[in-house]
Length: 455
Image (cartoon, rainbow, N blue to C red):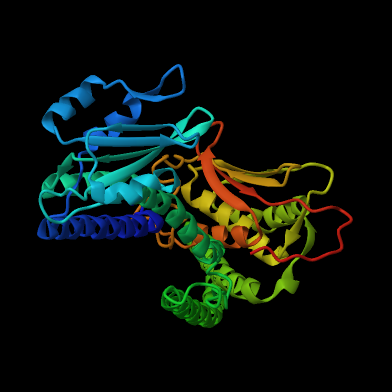
């Protein structure tokens, strides 16, 4: 079994996500290099996280500092650390010695939003950060400085961590969700064309795929497929013309051969030759049936399968009896109405009986039966057909015995005719040994007046 192809939607998604990741990674590297070159400083992240949780409101409403273990450690590391906090109620708190140059900014602290100021020259006294947190029914504005660092690697890591969660990850997730949806919607017309291609019957001439609805990039593939269909159709036309011509040309010599055999003295050799000629005649007629049934829907009509099979058995019975085989027929009293070409279906029954005559044991009985559900069976008492060969005997030129006098075309042509009538044909074991060929045809109403061509 062929391996399924890779999903185009996921291939495009991965090919979009990968460049996105590489571009962002390159951006992080460039940003880190720029930070390193400019010696940009920033407030230590541990201090920025520890200060807000260390500020508490006293009983009288004042702001107080109760350092956490992390903040005490950072205060020892950064002795110049200073903190200014102010809430919207006017309470203020100061720790350490803020630079006097920042006095105007500190006075406006309760009007500042979250922000950062990065100094570029040591000792980075201008480096500070502003944070805003909820503080009961108001908000607390905090300014922190005196804990500056200028480690480019650490800064780049911090920036990468910040952007990864806030930019890269959401972008990748959105891409993984949105791109497959967009691709599938864009490929909707391609799936429709694929379903149309899957439903095409090569036996029907002129079938083509519509290329106007598919994306421009897919149109060459659709046009190539249509060109292949055209070549296949032309090949079938050539084949049909050849088969029709060959069948017509065979009629004359077969008729002459039949007349010469009729003039022979009765005997086993004459009987054998009559059977061979009958098979050749039936094959030639079946070839013409296929060619006619392709192009003439008017050949179909409502007919009684029981009467058709009984008449066929009556016609071929003398030849069957002369070959040493008995033949019997069984069918329901009521008509079994089917729709099709009477001549073509009659030759299918003849073909199956002739096949049974070739493979039945000497003095065997060939049974032909019709069931009310539209099934016709032809049973012999020969050696039967092995399970391995049951699917292959309907292939053209396949013979169960290479030394057989058959052509290997009869069963193949029979199946072609039956399938064009909307039916099926198969073979199984007969109840008392031998082979049982079953033809199933769709029933039609006894009062149906419409004519439908099944192909």
